[in-house]
Amino acid sequence: MLRCPLLPSHGAAFTAALVAAALLAGCAGDSGSAQRAGIDLDNPDKDQSHWVEDAPPAPPAYDLKRLIDVATPRGSSVKVGIDPKTITINPASGVVRYVVVARGMSAVNAMYEGIRCSTGQFRIYARQVKGQPWEKADDSAWRGMDEQTGPGVLLRHPQQLAQGGLCDGPAITATPDKMAQLLRSSELRPDLYQYR
Image 1: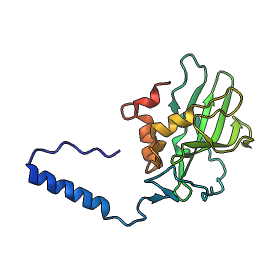
Image 2: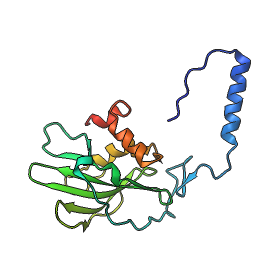
Image 3: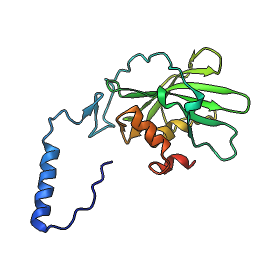
Image 4: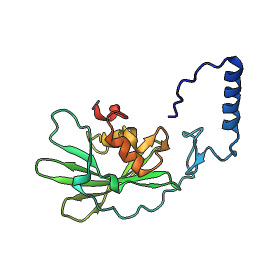
């Protein structure tokens, strides 16, 4: 979200000229400027039946030492984190992919996932138990971030990651580095660190 600092008062004529210039600047772009990844950013809920996902690359290597933790319920013995070096953006399909790792008392499990900011959906491509090979996920369909992934199972981390920095509303945050910066910063995104 773009925020402008408060401008000093220069009178009505100056303010009117400033508003007119801003409006003209907003209209100066070409008619296709509101398009990204085949998505009408002015109407992101518009029918996207023509959308086709690219073939996801193999899951990238991750490192437990680089994880940025995601908030988990109070009393949970499982910690969830994202390795920022695994974040990739495909601007053609509008998909952000990453590896998230769940660490418990006796197990470490990783998931290779994707998020579509424009639709508020996520997908699990593959899973891995630490030390084992990656296995393709059986339940790999795109689903809403508020949908259950199995009987009684609601994954909260995709929505927290989207709100915490992977997405900027229905748009993708500019770069993986910017995403990591936002995810690390509790001052910039305090909603990420409050489990609901």
